[in-house]
Length: 162
Image (cartoon, rainbow, N blue to C red):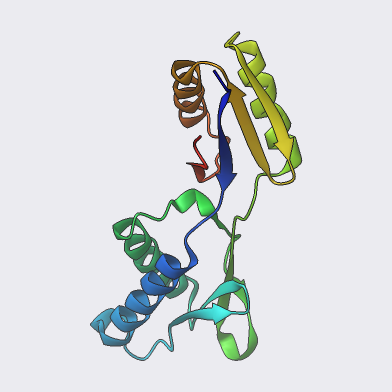
């Protein structure tokens, strides 16, 4: 019997993020508490830019975006951002980047964790993803459960199950 395998990746569905972004932008444009605050949520290249005339309104717009992402089943672990920064003319800006791929240090920690579990599987780092292979599909499912419980704050997905 051939080995079974699957890939562990950290990625987000850009189309779902785009849909959530459009919904958040529409809600911000129509909500009363955002009137006169010049609040906006939009793409800025590969990042999401949130702007408003106060730090509180930027955080409120971020909450609206998070709400829309959760409704579209996009993991909030895929967002990386700092505190809102003051910009020009008294505005505040927040730049959010999306996680793409598993960083090598976290991938090494996951491989170490899988080896420590004593399951009969092999874990290999392939660029920014992991390939897990083994003879028993039950062992592979146990590895998935193990990684779900200790996901290293990454939006993990299991793909290419063979």
